[in-house]
Image (cartoon, rainbow, N blue to C red):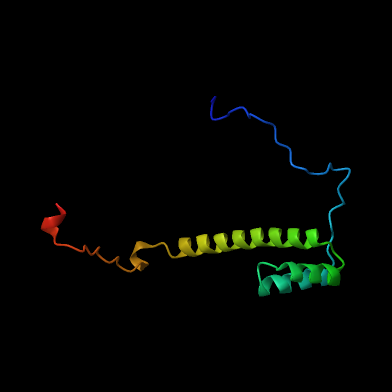
Length: 113
């Protein structure tokens, strides 16, 4: 291994279409986004039947629905992490922290040595 890099034994290519073959990026309408956001607030993960229903009602493909939910979950997790980080920074003063409990050992000190 040279500087943390290593040669691949096999080249791996995902079965992804070329840029020419792919559909153009979907621009969702306000109605579609409202419906998707509302459903996301209800449940972060969709059942297959719910995905099929949403795809039909919003005139999107199941893949588009699945991808939107995957991307939205990623955004949601990033937002949660940022909120938690912000909360920790705001409340990081040692004087504001409650004292930590002392560890309790199940047997007397002379037996621990």
